[in-house]
Length: 84
Image (tube, rainbow, N blue to C red):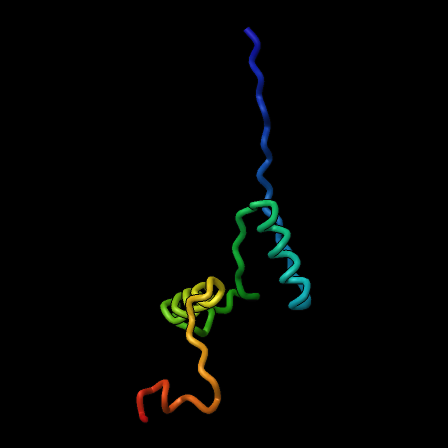
């Protein structure tokens, strides 16, 4: 009987990008490799925004990306708002 043991070492890597460009590249890299990751603020700072508000913004962004939005021309707001 042969037993094969595979040793997976699950290390934790902490990266601290210095620019937004580095942060975006790091995030894209992790997503491309399907690596789970978390983003936290330095020194344990809390996000100043309400999580429900963030969820609404992300949902709206997702809807926009799939084409679920209405475009209003600069001269058309009264018509769009049914004020005419």
